[in-house]
Length: 89
Image: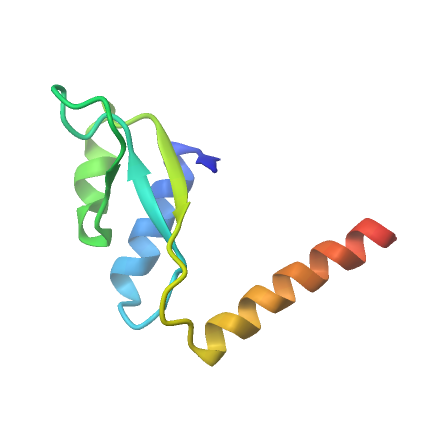
C-alpha cells in the first residue's frame, strides 16, 4: 500500500519511541540506495535520516503478519469492524 513520506516518518518515529508496540507492517522505501531500484525495509531508528534527506520519496507498507499478540488482534479487529460499520451506514 502506498503511503506518503510524511506518514512514513510519523510511523517510524512512533515505532522508534514505542519499541514494544507490534505494527504488522513494514515501512519500505524505493530510494534507499541509488544503485538499487527495489524497495528496502526502513528501520524505525532511521526516521531522522529519512526526515532530513528529501531524496526518500516513495514509500509503501508491506504486510508482516507474524506472532500476533492479543492487543494487535484487538486493534485489527476494531479497524475491520469500524470499516464494515461505516460501509453499511
